[in-house]
Image 1 (cartoon, helix red, strand yellow):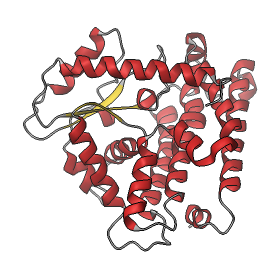
Image 2: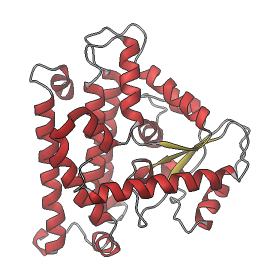
Image 3: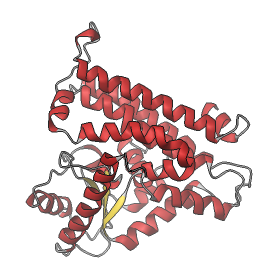
Length: 314
């Protein structure tokens, strides 16, 4: 990581320290055996600041009890932190079989897809590390089946990743238009953190080409277990510097309470987008530049004949 990327370094240090505090706090709750608490969001990505919520979900068997989520939320609040709203993907404890077995089909919900993809793309354990590790490995094995040939990519994972990202994009329109959610902050996050999450997942899938089944699983698991920014840097090396610089600016903005408030108060204003503030336009322009950086990275890393290029299209 370049020394100039101070916001990335600051966010990583803050996140690592907070993860340790949360693990200690949740350990003191003496949760029943079989419970695993999984952090997601900016904390798990090592991008958190004092402005961040603490997003998590609970994976449990039937012995954990219905009050586990409430107890964890209270523990987080007692530390002066913000737990996620008790709705959607974070509303209830889920069984590991739901994550493993509900892939596609009529029984899978958006929440099921979200939890599974967040587990793979941006998660870290807060409690129940062995259970977390076991589930993570099982999901990788579910996506990369025995008998996959060496030349193949982890296509099953890649297709679900693409589906997840497109679902986020479609849900953005629903949440900000039909459900009345704030537009500005969701728009900027979609163009930075959500796009980075998607792109870093594409890199992980691309790196599984021309490997044995066991090596595909090992490589995919390794890349997905490290934060997205590290994923970008490990795969792309020094070529990632420009994208990291752009993302560093984003993290600096997201750590600023005034910028957060600006984003929350910015509406789409589709009839006259020129009414957006100069500061918001600055953020939007930086987001478009970040997209260009990521696209350039893909072309520099993988030749036109690499299977990832066809797989993204078809």
